[in-house]
Length: 186
Image (cartoon, rainbow, N blue to C red; front, side):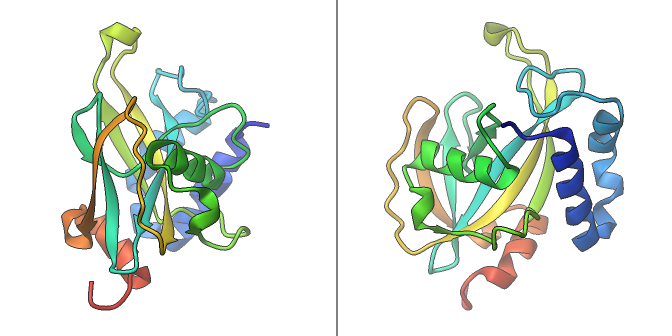
């Protein structure tokens, strides 16, 4: 089973119940949903497609960042949805394990019934002629996860480095959303 358009719409609606002030920021995502774009497909380039990210917080309140090989930027772990992904939350956990080696069994996530991401970030991805991909957007559904064990084993095909960074290194809107769940003193 793959992530469906109704699930994406439902998770977006749950997110906007918590963050109604971000409705205007989601206009491009609403447009793509309303136009019937296949948002779970990494080959959907008319506007873009959905990705799943992991905002992983350790006991010291630091967030795990990875150095993305292709984009040469520090990012949260995450990536494209796969046909076998049954949920956006599940895709976030799968990507986390693939890129960092942190098994999903060692991650504490929101309760299973809470499908609401901590953040939804819309960002532009540059064209990649080598992959025959035009410029497009990623609609990144970022889930908060907590870990006790901070042992990271990178997938070197996609990632070149990792670092545990303070929340202050994140964009302020994401740091603000993660601050209530980080251990005090971070």
